[in-house]
Structure formats: C-alpha cells, structure tokens
Image 1: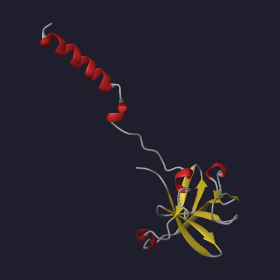
Image 2: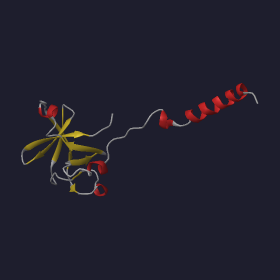
Image 3: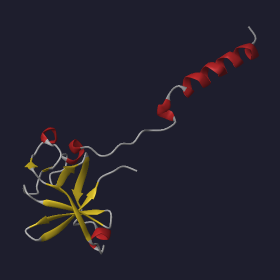
Length: 125
C-alpha cells in the first residue's frame, strides 16, 4: 500500500486522539484543601464559608498593610486537629469564640485577647 494513502487517515486519527485528551492542553486548578495544610505541623488555619484561611503574621507585605476593620464575618465555634472534623467556623489553633472581621484589604482579622491576627483566604489563581 502506498505510504501517502496511509498518512492522511493516520494524521486524522492522531489529531482526534490528542484533541480528546485535555491533560496535555490545560490542567485544572483548585483551591488548597484542609488536608494539604495538615501536612505542615505549624499550620494555623480556620475554615469559613468553604474557604481555608491561613495565618499571615509572617508574610512581609501583610505586616506592612494599613487596614480598617470592617464587619464581623464569622466566629470560631469549634477546634479540630484533623481535616475530616472541620466544618464552617472550625480552627486548629484559634480558640473558640474568636471573632473574624473583614477589612478593606485582602486580609481578614482574628481578634484574640485584644491582639489582631491577620489571615489570608487561600485561593488558587
């Protein structure tokens, strides 16, 4: 059989197979999960409205922010040390009763014994 007669059908088949596989074209990204944070012993996180918030006291640009406290957006109602036990309002280090406030910046503030602790919402992309 002539090589040129085989080339066209083979090319069409190859394009079809590669086109149906999205792994090579793009990869989906998602927000970090609680399990990912529990891999680190020093993780200081809480879950609020389906998002993980992480302590940002050591993030340089966060410490330089000037912010104004807004309304209270949540409160820590439970403590847990395993991702499977987390639900809305759960923290692994913040004490129960800690109030969470939004600000006019990307930072949320947890107030513990009068101290304002910055937390960042962990979202991908």
